[in-house]
Length: 249
Image (cartoon, rainbow, N blue to C red; front, side, top):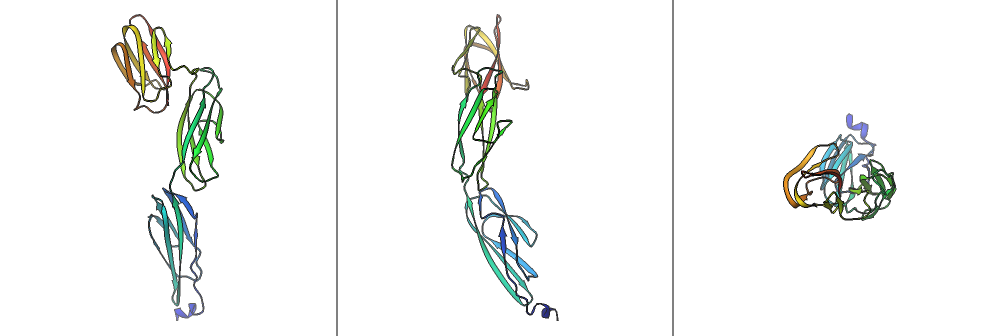
C-alpha cells in the first residue's frame, strides 16, 4: 500500500525566512526547509499574500508589528508544524543637511553633508546624479542632489538638497530688479524701481511654467507647486530685461 512507503519516515517542518527584521512596506520571503513532507500549507497573521508556490511564501507587510507565520506539513502517516515570527519596524529615517554653496556658477566647489536620525546601523548613502556613497558629497556643481539612505532593516528614505552659487546674500539686485530670497522655498519676491514689469519662470529644459504681466513695482511668486531644483526667471520692463537663475529647495 502507498502508506507503507511513509510508515517509518518522519516528517519535520522547517522555515527559513529571508530576514527576521524588516521595514514596514517590505516583502519577506519564507522558504520551507521541511523533510519527509508530501503536503504543505501556510497560515499567517498580518501582512498580505505576495506569492505562494507551496514551498515558498511571500508576504507584504505594510505596517509595523510582530507577525507569526505557521507551516503545517504532513505525509500519509505523520505531520509536523512550525511557527516563525518576524519583526516589522517603522521607517523613521530623517535626513538633515548642511550645505556649502559653490564659489561661482561654473565652480565645482559645493558640498553637502547629511546627519541622519533614526534607522538601524549600518547606514548606506547614495547621492544622485553624482556625489558618491558617503555621508558627505563634495566637489559639487550648482544644482540639486538626491540622497537615498538605507538602513540595516531595509528602511529607506529619499531627500533633496540644492547647491547654489550665491555668496550668502538673501537678495539679488540687478538692473533695478530685486529678487529675494534666493534660494527660495515657497515664495519669491520681486521688486522693480518705479516701473511695471512682466515675469516668466522656466525650468531647465526651457519650458514655461508660470508668467504674469503688468506687475506694479512689486509682486510675489508662489513656488510651492514646483519641485526642488534650478529655474530661470525672466523679468522685463519697456527699458530693461533680466534673466536670473533661482533655486527652489
